[in-house]
Image (cartoon, rainbow, N blue to C red; front, side, top):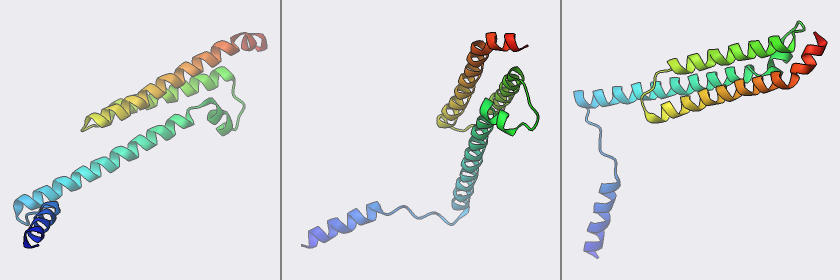
Length: 133
């Protein structure tokens, strides 16, 4: 029975996280962890803002927000400009890990796909727009 208690105590000690040194080294670790947390929060906020900007670049969003009537080609041009702005901003975001790079690649890929959709919309509407003009 005593052997089982010793094994249980050893397991519980092994599962406990190591205590953080309260000396200079410990403070450096705490400061580094705090900087890391702030970086992650800023990165996540930036990614969320980029996604919202992309959502606002859709033709539906642009047509709903404009007070004045605007032509389809102008809306597509405005949408593409906003998409390009998001792509430029995404390429300037600082990264620390591979996961950050992949997240930004997804934003850029999403942006390119949105521009492709705009091109398709313009192509499909080309004949109709030519008749109207």
